[in-house]
Amino acid sequence: MTATGDGAADGNAARDEVERLRAEVRELRARARTHPLISRAQGILQERYELPDGDSAFALLQRTSQRFNVRMRALAAMVVTVPRPDGGDRLWFPRRVRQPEPDLTFAPTHRPEPGNRGAVLSAVLSQTLAVVGTDMGNVQLADRVRGGLHIEKHTGLSEDFVDFFEHVGEEGTSCALAARDLTQVTVRDVESDPVFSEPARAAILAAGSRACHSVPLTTAAGLCVGMVSAHAEQPLRGLTRAQLKELDVVGAEVGRWLAWHDRTVVLDALEYLHALGRSRRGTRMRRS
Image (spheres, rainbow, N blue to C red):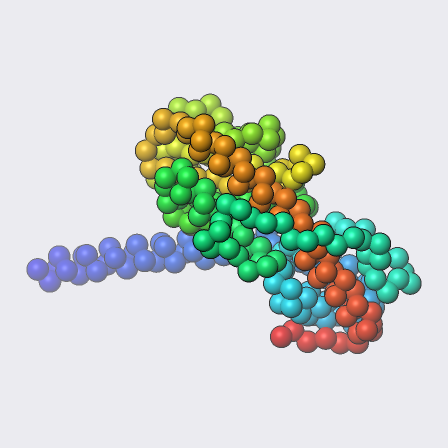
């Protein structure tokens, strides 16, 4: 009995070590994906505001991120992609017009606090899963730097799934097809649907998903700014017209809200960053 117990303990220890190594690899991959973008933004800010080092530029990003509840990655992407402010302008966007925050009529029982993107993404994911009738899903947003979509929020999915689909391009998945055609896409059986590349199919099946439904988040101008997808453990028969109509409303409202957030909250954050950078020009800043 002692030998058997020792063998079981050794087996558990080995599994724990494998899982620890997998988690470490996932963390390293996540850092490798994010670090170049933030480093690029640091370089831009260091040059623009004559900051003495990269840490000061990081501190500038960090303070802005915390003050406006905008993720560092999203803020860095805007710094990299938005045209720089004119050299002598006190404001980065002196002629912009502010619009009121759009309503989200689909979530009256758990209305997010004003301007909170994370809460809105949680609400759209919860609503989509409730309509489809499952508890696995994710929200992706358009990647301003690389193109395609990256996962921003998820529930019920394995870490391996999230790592594999952290970023998807323009083909090989149902969400890529939904983004391209600006229409909802139902995959009734992942195992046989030709929309998936073989590596993507294997990753989805390994996560326990046998069917999925993707809903594009679209702006009033018809641009896809994100995607919400529900995954099911069993093949789907398809959604009813009422379900599809409800999800159309969800996708349109959240797409418009995300566009408002980029034009308002994120630009407010950039204005603050610009003002702080100007006021601290040439001086050292510390990370918080």
